[in-house]
Image (tube, rainbow, N blue to C red; front, side, top):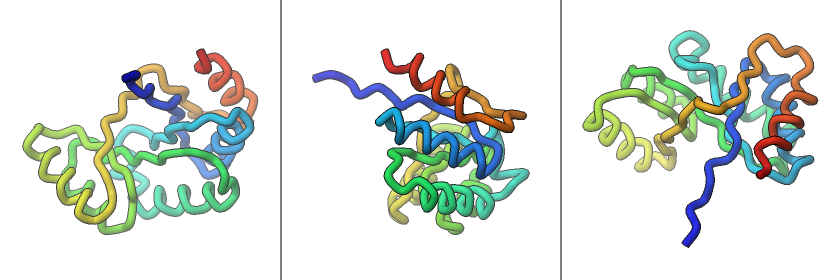
Length: 142
């Protein structure tokens, strides 16, 4: 049995970048992982992320994407994200804390993701990210 490779990961900082990422993924016919900036739940809040995801999915409903909110090492923030309706969170914490949060997430229909940022495309400062995302997805095709 072949292991399924993780989809290409793209770090977005705005709704415009999220929409551009989903458009590129849809055009390429590829799934994509849309990651928040590191620790975004701490400074932008889970409500911001939830609304970015909702608006981006409304703009490009056929795109195959998972949105992951980074909650840094704060289980309380991860819990707030789950209460806010965020479906996938990332948490850097001790294994026993991660297991407890994962169980709570699963009970609410959400999940705790293991997402590495290594190899991810970071769109920080990009005003026209479309061509950059297109090229990134094309390079990651192999």
